[in-house]
Length: 344
Image (cartoon, rainbow, N blue to C red; front, side):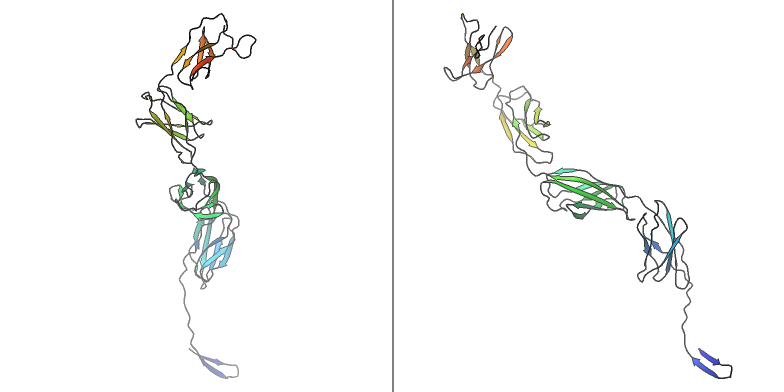
């Protein structure tokens, strides 16, 4: 362009110069508002160098110039769940975008983890989460491990993700963070138990009475009969357990039992041989002038319990080796003596 300047005295000069002018009538795209919660600064992206104006629910505004990378941030005035925030962009040419809106999410997701008892030192962990978009992180002994949000209300930390944990309790914290930054947590205890229980104890077994014994309290006792069938029962708080006698046991059969503790550890087997033969006991005839006589007899099982019944009353007897192995002598107390039990 040629420009001539003339002053009041008639002096003139000419300047030749070229200038480029850009006409911008295109409105910028609406800004992007990142998910908004009730407390954290409000952020987003817009055309670099444009001025972003954010309007809060109460009508107040905040303005900021988007940086060279397009990011911007304004303060959060303390919003409530469900509030709507609006933002527009004005580029340096004065063109204004359409509005962008975001609904405030001020509610943290709910996440849960159940207590775990396992014999796996690197266990898989699972739980529930209320937000399918939340990021789930599991913290074990101070270290974070990302979990998978399955999108169906559950989350999973895969088996062998954790390092080998020592036996004993470990405090586990799980945190679910939604896209707006709200975080919910839950804490549980994971107990590692890799120690097998002792083998159960089988009481002596006959052909008809229930099969009984003791085991670690709360463990599951599995009894295997000679024909391969099994019976299972949980040992009580005092360790006792009982299962039915199948009724087909014969003298000399072997019954086996194992115990599995709540963590899944299994004991070695315990065995018992069925004794289905009753002991033979005999009582000698007695003719005496002693009104409280001692009674004697024989029994072929030195472990048998012997009871003498006289006129409907039971009197415990004892076995002794007085005359020969298996010889029975029942000692009764006589009146003022302290070493006999009076008979009627």
